[in-house]
Length: 515
Image (cartoon, rainbow, N blue to C red):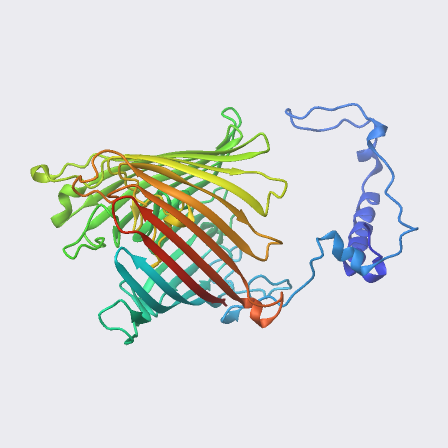
């Protein structure tokens, strides 16, 4: 519905632009617009006959007076609100309208420096009551996440991430019972960055330095940085190293509309469950990583693939292994969204015939139905089968961590989960997610892990068959636009039945404030 231009500044601006365009057309030589003049076009273009039936007059709304509420209804009843701002903003604010400052010509007038510093993140406090086997525990813990972003130009920035209230997997907390030092508050302070890296585009940098526009994009990053591929299923780790990408490739002959290729290498802080240190923790030193990953939009779907090498040094020389993955995602018939993922770890050669830690394959199939409420009502079924000891390229958790809510671990509240390694197991998760009016979330799920082979095999993660029931609910505390709406409350519960071992159970209540 058109709006009354006297009440809409956009219409006034549009009218001015249209008038200027009309003047420009009228000032053009009439011979250039003659119907008899030859038309210049590319060889791929083809002229088609004129069809007057394709053009109709603009609709008329004289019988429908302007109504502000009706205009809001067009957009689903949405209206402006007081959006949260970062904790600290210096320089140009993010997500605001112009006009903007001119910036500084420090590295070239075609890549203007306009520095802006913003600090944002969230704080969350969770209460957890958990039963892990025959041990009952209760804990109250807090986590603070801080992102510090220093924007330099339109394509270059320095970014850092801090978690000042937890250190080495231990959180600022009060252990209520089930621990050795109940009721003793624990303050864990750590000002070391979780990540700190520089990222930019070499094409934009060269453009600024040479004062000539470049025809290539070459995004890159270097430092202590996060890398995530296939939603974290293949890789989800913070490494010290570098990466670059060759973006926006295409091939009409191969039906490739878009393709990116990423190359990365890391030389410290590389973690994988396949390599443990002397304390039994995932080693984060003396492990290097090299890899290449790509995504391709082709065959009316989305392909992802990758290959990487884990290179152990010093005491970890015999733990080297290769990791490969391929995945394909597509919608079928307007009713099913499907992703098929395969990953494999191979090439590990242990000394003295010691048990291998990375030598298996995992097939994961993710499905969700497209219902009459496609954005808010999502039934899903994810199934998997793992053989031997499949490993991701790099991650602190197992490859099944996103298979369902019953597989998600939470270190903050010590919330339990089903086995997420996929080591000689098969199973899946069946559930439904409902988002109401996009202001609440409810997830209900049942899941299972079934062992393959001998339950007493040395090094096996899952000792017997597992069954889980989980539920999650979260929503803002207050009405939209109010102060309380910036707080999110979340409740989780799960119960896991183990065939031959003690059951597990967990309940958690979390309050989260974003800023």
